[in-house]
Length: 95
Image 1 (cartoon, rainbow, N blue to C red):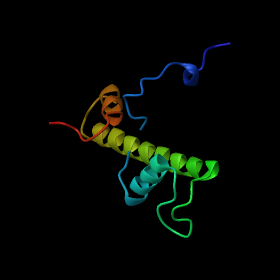
Image 2: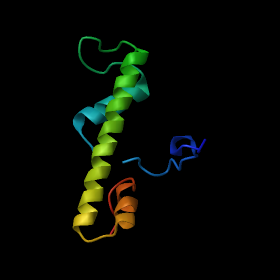
Image 3: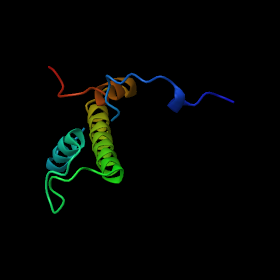
Image 4: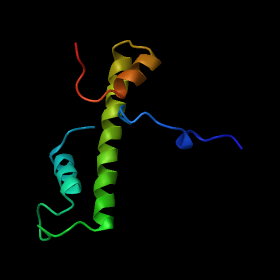
């Protein structure tokens, strides 16, 4: 059986496709503190379900940003490999 790509060691210094937004920032803060920061459950600890919801949302935001950067780089005339590298960079592009 061939080794799947998901089982290989991954370099975690690269983005896996992060779009900053108010909700994502709040979710990241809540996830780090492990307590609700707003709403009727303010101050209560996060359940495992709530932690999962926040993690999933943050991953989706990261995917959206990565594909945006990839398509933008292709539109600027970069090769597919160059566009892939750009889309995985964390932070803003340095000139």
